[in-house]
Length: 632
Image (cartoon, rainbow, N blue to C red; front, side, top):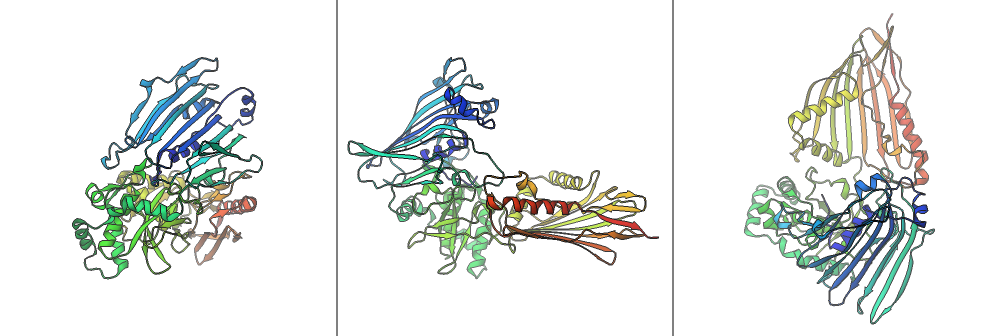
């Protein structure tokens, strides 16, 4: 959806992170140490030749062992992206060696070329070569090699790449070799080094060329945990670039796309129509933003030079679809026509590795948005992909990262803040009327802000009226078995001008437990938030939610009853999150309130156990019972 990975070599680097590799021999004893792994990587090699004339060639070799049935289902197919006309792809080898030693080659006629964007002519510039290994089974070895040659490197003479030195699956060896022509100055870093499994480095000469090699071996399986940071921020990763600075990167991009944001007569006419009668820059920006996100369909483009070359604003307007750069180009052209200064901004969304500022490379980014200048220090960011995000807020994926703003004077990095509880929130209020039989009439009202609101809008936008009704019925049933949905209503999820909210009512039979003269009742729908804290221990930090989550309930005491017991208040606090829960009686109504407020975006491993205990106390609090007894 929101990716713009470029140039086949960086794309493949990411592809191989998710699709590791394997093998057998003395290696078998190594792989047997990791019963949860699916694949064993025998060898992962990448070799690059970069000329000072802009020509580029790479060779990739992979050898793997299928460790179980899961790996057969997940890793039997390989996809190699490339761009005809700019790159020449050659499959050098592809075969399976069965456990009994039989070699099965992948036949040429079993290799298929396809257009991933055939439905979108504006982006139909890339191809994917796909092939499937024959005869895969547990214990089988698969291996392949390909070369990719290009007539130019990405930044008009500057080379950039990234390579995962360690995989999420166990790996016997991985290496990256770079042949660099004279006159090219390389910047590189090995990120997230592992002191127990260091990355070795050697350098030498091959004629006039420099030859640099990084390698590592015997790296074990990495456990997945919910809410963990991206793999690229945890595992050793090599990042390289010969670009002199970020200005070279920005100049290259603007040479490709700067003309695409020029307002044509058609663009000017639309801008005038959208801003007619509006006087402030903020109101004009809001009107333009809401029109673009509401009328331009998003197309995900992830590979090849098409990942950075966008269509003109007028073409995007004509076709009514575009990738994140296309939507940004149209936004910029309309803003420029309305006299509002703005520029492109690039970022790595927060599910991607953090940007390393001292290695200039456009490859580090996977998303493009728009930055609108407010004053000398402040910027307003707009995301054309935010189809459900109201003006003034950003999708959660854009928050908490640094954006490279392509300012006309000089590109600068600007930190995008994380929304706080004023803009990022979820509130739910319930009115509960209990009768003496324990039946309950429950009315639920919800309002949201920020990415919470955006998520709710997206959920309802994608569903028909009947599906929406079913979703409310399911919610009622989750609160109490046998519940009957009575009615529901919601705002227009496509109208970004107004806050979004919803409500529904249901009747729950025997929602309270009866025991003689006693009724025992639990507040329905209280969320525990334990999904991040199931494991007793963690080895990775937690990237959690942000904002404020408030739940309230008003429970009318049944006629003829009084309150015998109310749960005690619970106040919990930590550097990561705070929680306040309280029950109190006012007249014949029990008032319940629970507030969860996040203070930090990341939870360190050292603080995990203490925070988990906080969540367990919160979960137990949610199971507390109110006890009513009959008046005598």
